[in-house]
Length: 249
Image 1 (spheres, rainbow, N blue to C red):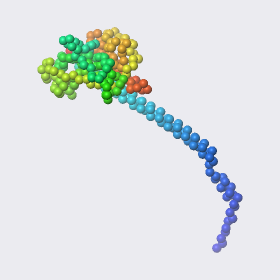
Image 2 (image 1 turned 90 degrees about the vertical axis):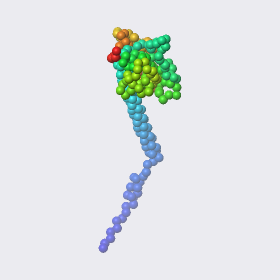
Image 3 (image 1 turned 120 degrees about the horizontal axis):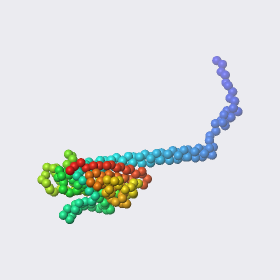
Image 4 (image 1 turned 30 degrees about the vertical axis):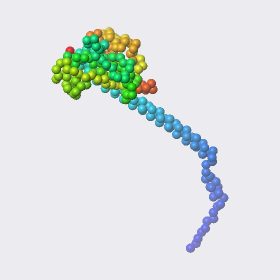
């Protein structure tokens, strides 16, 4: 057996070893700076994307809550006989008590109940500051002052009794309940627009319009509603409006 031993070319090995040398300190520092810039830009973009997504979610939630609150109002207005501009006085007494702890309240909708509802006193929707130490958020909230509703759509006396099955003038418990919160306290963009002909009763007066107001027809049978919701100044305000006509006598 013939063994062949190849001689090692040491100069070539040394050249290869020199070509495979590591990074210098300057090169490492430059790479670290570039990596930091890339990570910072990526993090800033991700943060901006997350904030935009959060704002979009808030706006969607605000819109949905406005639609639900308006749908509830519309149903009750349709059940009513008239929409009044101020709470009626019965025997020298106004049947309306704002929620305890609320302030700067202003009645917007006063619904005169239909004759077959079993009610004798009006239902009031009003805007106010949220009560102290409340889970409800400001700047303003919309309250409903009225009796509870049963699943069949009739009013309850407060003890789950259907008023339509009780004797006339039976006692009825009225409650203050927040319908929707985070109502804007800034003058709406259309707040200075006067009510159009046929809807000459602005509630409140035009100069006091904030996040919830109405124009009531002269016959008190129909009303135009506006609501504005804004969680905070950085979030786009959401608005909703509707024309509703009473359908009861």
